[in-house]
Image 1 (tube, one colour):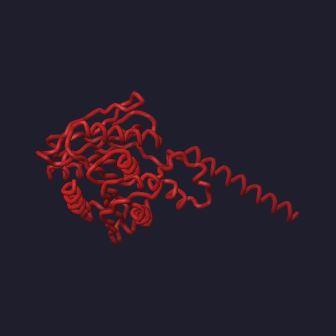
Image 2 (cartoon, rainbow, N blue to C red):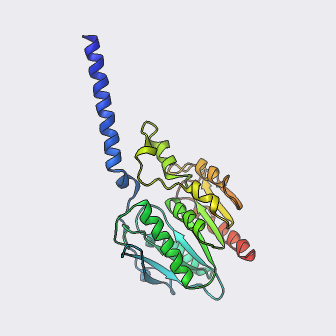
Length: 269
């Protein structure tokens, strides 16, 4: 009787484990991406020179985004945001870029509010390259800024294209490593579709790299930024903010740090 109960309990545990793993596998992109969110209008912001743009992709779709040309000889920031909502929600940052004379291009990846299509790692990387190439066609020096998930396509673009500088805000070493931290009981590396192996691309990045992270980041642990920075071929600085969470670095002064970094990088080009 005891043996039957034991075997029955083990069987239930195994079935429950398989069901949980199956649920995580089927719903992994819904857990990873939160594409719904409000689209802000440029007229709601203080952006005077920005306009809505549509950038073709290789799949016949188009990326929606905002573009503002730089003033005089200033550079343009190609901004890659995270995994939730529309980039238009980050208009305070874009206003700050424009106020200092920088141009910017900020798009929604396919599957996010401004850009129809399906979400996948491949599509995001393709979209990131398409956005960069479009910005390059406008002329002038380019700077790359990737935030959270956006740090990974930013690294991929920098490994494939030439820019003046690469800024990574709260980056992960790889998406699969973060997932493994959260689900240590699941063979994540075998099941995860979109692994975003940033650490494999960083070796091919020639431009100077600035990494910023907070010690209280519960979304992407600070160890990710530290580990990634240790493998950067051309490091500029690693800025660790004590007590800062995943969304705190703007308030902590990353824009001032970014301007110092960009200025130094542009002087060296």
